[in-house]
Length: 421
Image 1 (tube, one colour):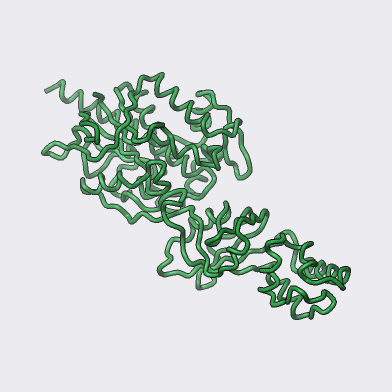
Image 2 (image 1 turned 90 degrees about the horizontal axis):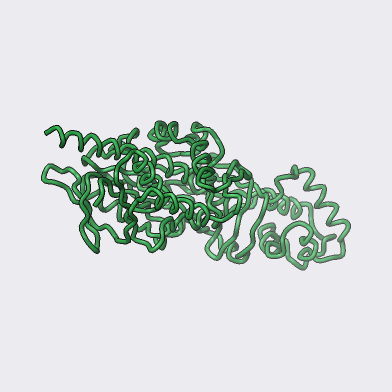
């Protein structure tokens, strides 16, 4: 069949197949879906945030878990390499806010089509099958893979099946099962970059409301600030979502031991004194109007009943009847809307998976398994994950390339050994 089989045609798997082929070995890519790159279609809201325009060191700084493991792979395949790689494949790129890199067309399909063209140009076989088992010799060396449709011999395997998030794209956790059967330790997969459920039910009253340019602080039960950033937040029927929330969730890793609180500043551009002066002006200029009508100048319509309720001001209260204490509570609500977090949404709704194959059991230079000869591991399967902004895809490209080159070297040295015997 082929010298090397790559299981999973996602970002890491496709990069691994291309890198191995460049080294001169035959490669077969096995994918369970009809199309390659299913998860790439949904990254960056369908625009595919391919990487982040920054240094390797900055990628590691945005990887809160096991970043040291990535040092070698990230140095050899930095964001600048990834940008050049896609430009050469005919995908012009652009850099947006937060150094996020997107195709100029804003179409994830352009990234996937370019990768598919390159796979075909390099004559890499693409088979549709679901791999269920890795086949090993009595000595424990990889000799092939078993799929639902057949058995495929090879000299090495790269496992790039993704995590357990977005199972509709094919990331159903199969890779964890296969690796665990061969002796690998699996750190319990948990959702990361995930929407959050809230204790308060007032979020559901504002379902569908997106707030732009708000400031979010995440505090633990000791009142320590774990995250503080400005951006966009979305209220949902279960709680909160949106870019700010997804980024914040990467810092919230222990819902059993910790209690997390969101503090949202709805008016971060205004100092407290300035906002209070504005409140005084609004109350004065609209003194004969009900507060539910006055608030339209300060917050979106869906927020009005919630904000007034939290500030304990009746909606029908005339502006001229608002007391100093009520105005103070209103100011506090606008500058520090507090929400208590119940926990994350299910892993199936997470953008990435935290946890996975223990990195101490993987060679950081070649992504080779330290447990099984001829097995290589990359991408989201590994116990590494980063914040939003193109960093997780950058990890996929870098570890995929390292695995492809590592597997090719292994195959070539094995073939030389066999010839010399």
